[in-house]
Length: 348
Image (cartoon, rainbow, N blue to C red; front, side, top):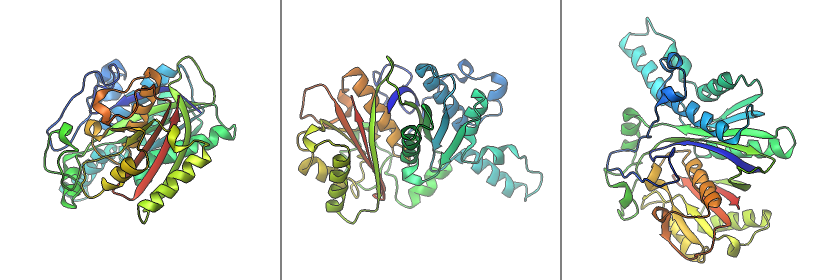
């Protein structure tokens, strides 16, 4: 499987050259830098679209345009929380109006499959359309479904994407259960040895195909997920098993992208692997750029794709450097709240 197109909207300037103009934050949470939607969507349609719907639609359009695939054989999206803003609007109106005189728009747009449905309507695509809502495994579930479809010759080009947004109310609720730090500078994420991370959001789409083209970024080689491992030994067993399944040894993994979130309670998992297993690899991290959210692994997937295409690792990503050679095999290891663990392998 090959990555033949990408479209990303994130708290960074994702529409510019790859991580060329880094934006740092010191706010409570990181919000996406949104484009001028009128450049991509009819202004009449824009009036009826929520923020996450606009972001997802534009990211998909960018991906499709870059890949030159006019009509994908399937559209698969993943989200943990769906369209939170519309859900909040509907519930607030429900309370304020005492369950009377409710407008249906917010309810209709609050469903998790709104984004994939909007993309299908935009493309007039009547093919397979599915949205996975599997918390920290949502994006990985999309990749697995696409991999199965392409391997079984049910599709040649699959549009895969993820989206999750942050709102003030959602932030306050999740802060009460200890998910987030007090406001810090995003570039100091790993130096603040406290519990919690910084909240973020983002949407990312990829065109996965069975054919390599002149626009190909990288090869998507493999995927593995596992839930609530008992200890670091079980994590290492899963990693070794995954690498064996993909016929690649640890010493051939030249770059590892960790989901380091700055959470003093859960980051020890990453540091253990970095110091004891991948001792020869370049070690990278990314959540200081996009924040923590359920589908943040899609942002790491974009970073790995860009690195392999441009044969260059931006300095802002390094935890430490062990090699100066051109990256060939990148392993993404991420977990959410130390429950949903995932491994993704990309090759040159």
